[in-house]
Image 1 (cartoon, rainbow, N blue to C red):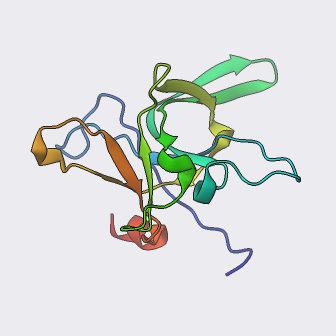
Image 2 (cartoon, rainbow, N blue to C red):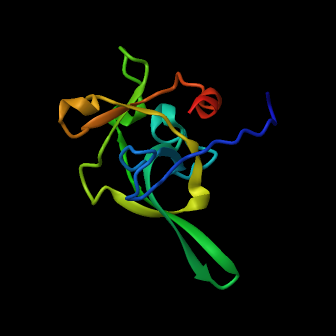
Length: 145
């Protein structure tokens, strides 16, 4: 419903285990592009947002109070953010240039994102890319998990 506030929880345990499992680094939506009125949103269907993996949260003390930052793993959309025909989902990959990591202000985080790895974790292959799930209801996800 319009105007309804939704709380989403994301986890970033840094190096610590999560309930006897490996460390948890959730995916989050980050406003990665500023759009002017005369422009189409960047990244196609992603509308100026990109999914980044939350690796660490930290606080900087500055004049005027604390300032929260996030260290993230960045992604780049394939095909300019146009959904694939087979899955109807946008594919993102690790950036081909740069380090693939960034420090951002926490106020750029817009909520939880859900990504599906192209290769299952059991394959032993490092993830080359992910599909951005547009089919999950994050309210239900947060209630169940």
